[in-house]
Image 1 (cartoon, helix red, strand yellow):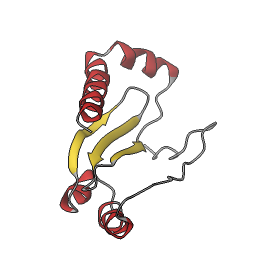
Image 2: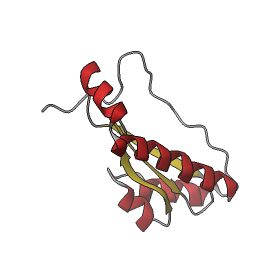
Image 3: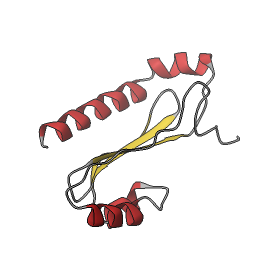
Image 4: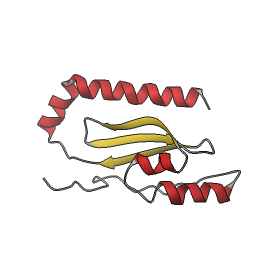
Length: 114
């Protein structure tokens, strides 16, 4: 299986715009945390896991961390490109329904604790 395109057709990449009270510390965190492919490096750099890596029905894997300054980061990767038939099956699969519930609940909790 070939790896899917990181940015699906019709979508654009995003450049973050960040306002910080401690830019030096934030840049050091970014350097340590996101020069990696997984959440583990962010945690080692001082982040806390908000949402563990979770695969979603439409083919993305998502995780969230809160950095030492309190910023919430979404780490998302396209891991598969399901066919329309596979999407229909996945939308009926309780595993993917539970994944969406988990994503929503962990985000709601993270936003309530800011």
